[in-house]
Image 1 (spheres, rainbow, N blue to C red):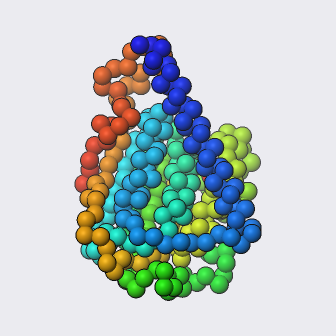
Image 2 (cartoon, rainbow, N blue to C red):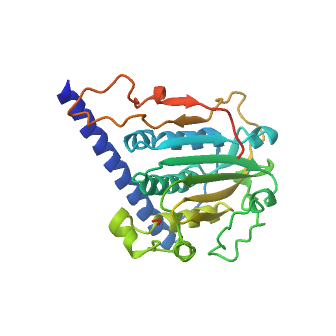
Length: 293
């Protein structure tokens, strides 16, 4: 039994390492396409909430392994604006969210308080997003003004323009004002110590900024040293004019921390109350409104 548990632990570690390597490769390929002017946004009919939830579920084993308390909340604005299906580029949205979640886990896992909260909401008017007190970074490409409609091509359809907003909040070490100014720049990290202590390439946030802007949005951060950071971004999309009749009902979820951290699985049997890497580790919650690589 102990041998089997040890093999499962090793397999899980290999899977996590492979996932991290894939994310680095994805960032490098994206950067290469960007330099060659081959990066594009291709809209598809998707359920935004389901897309975000599926992306977050990928991190469940990592969150459990690092004993991080996690919460995913869906704002009721999706119901108010009747947004179940939308035209957007799922791969580009995924990549931004994956980069932000990877950073949040990396900087939270060694802290005494280990909490990550993801919120997602929808809005018609861009001012609903930009007036929330979040400081968004100015666009790298000055020709992309915040009011510019990137969805005016035929492939985006004729549905109402909607903005999808996501925030990823963590209890990591936080950032000083000067450190935040270095973020989202190519091959830049908050401090020279960041690479030594946490690793990373300094590409993830720069690429997230580019991808967010390509989707008609912006990205920003609010942070306090010693407290944590909150990264916000929004993208532009359109509601589907003729959405499928059926759609999956998506509920927010939580992953709680262990009450007592058990010894390594290779030395002692796993208690029956230990978190499992499946839906049993998730408890449903009600909807709510709402230094880096």
